[in-house]
Image (cartoon, rainbow, N blue to C red; front, side, top):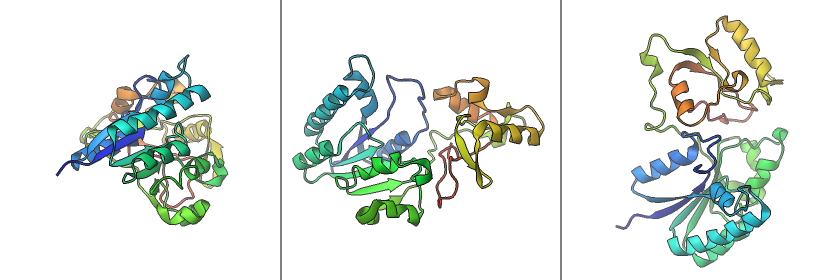
Length: 262
């Protein structure tokens, strides 16, 4: 039997190395599909948008070119299925055009950001923009109250946990008696996060945690100036005994930052 072809459209960073995280969900989804016998074709939508831009920035003109290219690419590749992960670069009309050319193709979108209205509607609206052109949507919250945001399409939205992959989360800190750090919190220090029932600036939360712990083996990368991405991020996690997982909001059933998986 011929392996099914899946076109996986996501932020696979090759050009913009800032924030190049090797343990993000797109890689894990691709690896899992490949191990289950699928042919996976990765399409780095954001990097390609930069390629189509004159100065390497994501502009409206570049987006128009990228959407046209995507339609042509799909007509050549002819995938059996498509996964869209946070593909804000592609318009719903573009997906509709691709589906018209490939009527048997199935399409699923995946979104990992919170959909709580307290954080604004930008992510909710991103998901809604493609609900009528995809077969199914997976999000990282299982809160049924939040599903009401999707109206008539709510029964085509489901939960996906932040995955862990044996080839990525391979550190075994528990095998070592001493590690470089006791605690790590890799989070933006300027962002408000829900902590003990109220919103506080992340840096203030970590200051309190550090004082309570009472030692200096606490790593808060964005405060101390360390650039943690790529392999550097991975190695640092493997040299920490514990991680603090601070989601921006903590009241939605089963939702959590993917730091827990890392």
